[in-house]
Image (cartoon, rainbow, N blue to C red):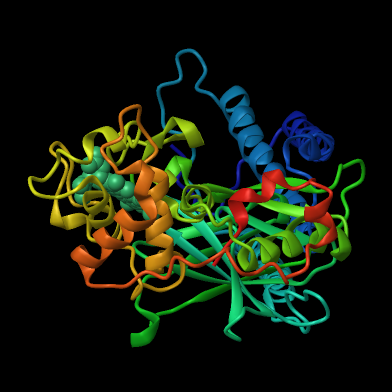
Amino acid sequence: MDNSRSNIPSISPAAVVVTAVFLLVSIIGVNWFTTFVPLVLPPQASAESKSVDELFYILMIIGGVVFFLIQGMLLISVLFFRARDGDLGDGPTYHGNPLLEIVWTIIPALVIVFLAVVSYNIWTQNSEPKAAVNMIDGEETKIKVTGARYAWTHTYETNRLDADGDPIVINSGDKLHTYIGQNVDLELRTQDVIHSYWVPAMRVKQDLLPGNPDFGGRPTDIRFTPIRVEGAAYPAEYPIVCAELCGDGHGRMRGTVVVHEDESQFLAQFFEPAIYAILNPPADPVLRGEIVIQEYICNSCHTLDSLEWSSRTGPSLNGIAERAGERVAGQSAEEYIAISVWNAPAFVVPGYTEQMAVFGPDQTDANHMTAEELYSIVAFLCTQGEQSDCDLENLTEAIPQAIKTAFGLEVDISFGQDDAEASQPEAAADGSDESEADSESD
Ligand code: HEC
Ligand SMILES: [Cu+2]
């Protein structure tokens, strides 16, 4: 066996030709393949999406060529350099070719530096804070997103004031309303584990990091600016997904970005009706409860056919009013439901564990629930069942009484009865907004 160390075996011209052809075919093939990528990707719905897709194409082409080249070389080696019949010897031993080694180190290094620079530029460009964010009615506002197993909640801290002079907060549940050209800047917080707010159509994704903000926790920000998508009908809707495995309900932790065509459509179809509904809640607690309960993440754990909820972490709320009176001896149905919502651990339904989220006046953001809201939620749940254990004729007295007994709190049930002077916005007046019922109130 020839053992000389720097003796490179001669390469047959055929192999060189095959390699060259393979390289050419893979470049052309990968290029051709990328023309199909837009069919698979969601539409480019944000200003950020173009640069992200450009980076994606660059990565695809480089990765694709490297892949086909390496597989091609492997194929060629197997075909041309395989052991011939009767050849039982080792192949020639050789190593040490400084030129070759320098070349195959420098080329990938340059490629990686190039990718790092391009990626870094696109990342900083897309994530850097912008001026004039979340403009509504000519003013900046704050939009917060709360992630919790397994739901998203969006809250708008508006510049409108309620009767007491406090800023009105719109809770739009799992929907983010925005409009073309609005510089969206969301503050993200989680109530439990790490989640990740991902809007594929906007090409943005950001983790939510645990930690109590009062003790140095870390709210994060996600920024994007919706643009017009050719051929889309407005308002257009795009999914929000959780991109961090956060538990068994991770797959249904979803929401929707609703992009309105312009600010006036946003105001008319979402914002003004939401403000109007907050200033003019229905006087009937049951009707109000049906709206209020949908602002919370109850749907992420419970089933309730009348509202099309279908989650199974907690017991079904179908017919809850028929069982509520018998759950705990000595507790009225109203009291039992009120305690179940504000102080779930007080009684744990057999077969379930203490997994229910905590709601109450001391909680923040998505879990903040006033006594008035509790009152209307209890009123609504009292109507869920054929034979209600609640005193349906007398809810306006029975529920405040139950809340007083359970928590020692007085409930102000006068809402919706004296706000006649607030003016009706046009959009709500033309009746085009039943679908917004799930996005209103304080
Ligand atoms: C994180 C999941 C989760 C969320 C969110 C949640 N619940 Fe629950 N809920 C549970 C679980 C689990 C139970 C059963 C254990 C217990 O009784 O504490 C339960 C029990 C209940 C019960 C008692 C049911 C019965 O059959 O006796 C009521 C009523 C209830 N929840 C209402 C609500 C309402 C209203 C909301 C929203 C404001 C809500 N829940 C949000 C998980 C949840
Ligand atoms: Cu999640």
